[in-house]
Length: 165
Image: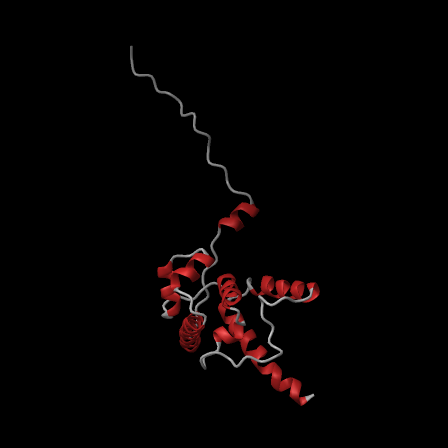
């Protein structure tokens, strides 16, 4: 009796179709210029400082915030110290939880002044406005950080444009 060579029963690897390949392909993070990188660092610090101030103003603990958001308390600490930047989806949830606007949370001057025409994501609104908000949030979540910064600058310029009319 000799040693018999057995054939492998494993199936050959299948090449993924275009849809599968696109789903598994990771898009590289766009490179930011040093100016954009420093603006991102400032924005991250502002978000963290404003988040901490609003949390303390509402007498909430880091553990309470983490529990509501489904994240670890240590991650909330990183966010508040400006060592991590939250995703847009998490940022929206933080705003809803703290009852503040995105502008208030991202304002570098310690939170924007609350104006009567500010739209709060957690405030009861009519269904048409809510659908419009959800549509904007859905579109924004597909943008790069560079595009988001540009849109934020445009939005901050809107009040001045309204006054000119």
